[in-house]
Image (cartoon, rainbow, N blue to C red; front, side, top):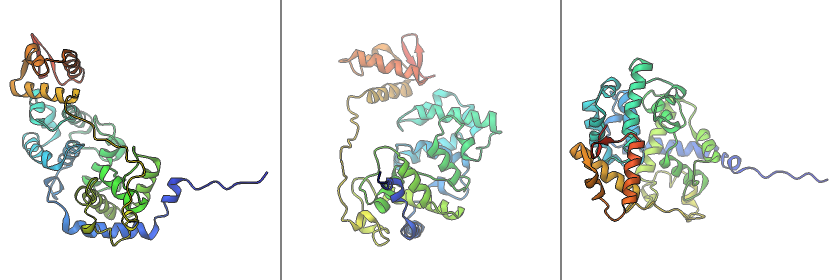
Length: 308
């Protein structure tokens, strides 16, 4: 029986980065030195807690919306102990319209865990960080590198897109974070700790400002001359462009947001006021009301809901 040689896996073939990856790291880090946005959580004196808060707020939310909320948050609750003791209703009011308000509850739970289990200091190390409420793989790595200046593989949507284009020659990353992407990100990460921190900061910024999803500014991108595989190939379209932005108008998420806005404004809302938000679909109103109760974002009042 004739032996057949197994074709190299997608991950293996894409790890042949070598000098190309080094050139890309150099180009991106050099670009960041002159292009980085001046954001307060990047300042030298920013506390680990303030960076943790920024990372949670920035999940699925643009910087322009986060910045005023982060500034108010840090003025009111500059330490985990401050937030741990805050009334939950005030926490939800301060969260305002950032979206996904469960993140606000998780942040307060996180603050309480830091106070009760870690003496009020954000713990070091990805393993310990991931034991905190609301802190997953990405956030633990981001805190490790941005707050504690440690070496960690930080991979968000922006970084995935830059790596997909520059080293894989693809317009978009995989539909979900794949083993190939994870291996590539780990391979590209510089071995020197300080250099790895600089790379993580720089490549994330490049994805946010230049190598964007819809209208990448390739003419201004430092990788255009540093060997970006996608640019060199003529910027080919996605192999299977089946992605769709999730509709918002008319969704449960939109109605939940309207109910939360009513609660933030008045502290409470009658059942009649809640039903008036979507009088044509009382089944959806009931579903959204009950989901807010389940998530701990509201509690039952005499005739409706109120903030917890």
